[in-house]
Length: 94
Image (cartoon, rainbow, N blue to C red; front, side, top):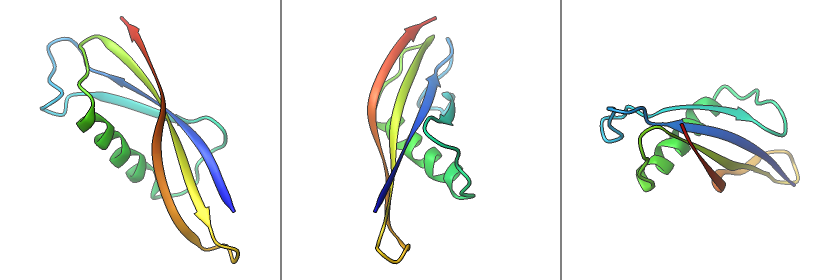
């Protein structure tokens, strides 16, 4: 059984700030259903850090990225895997 949720993350690098210095702000929200896992904020932050390491942001542009959050379970209900995958990106110039 696989449960798939989508998470919308908005990234923004304000003018005069540096992505290399970790000055990118981001916020996230689940799209399909609420998240109750206490570990989830750490996991999405890790996925965001990975995405930022692979993408250079322009100043004063909002990057909306949709991540697919996949949790895989075995037949007995144990989690067998979990990962994030960026599946959509849209830009909005401020």
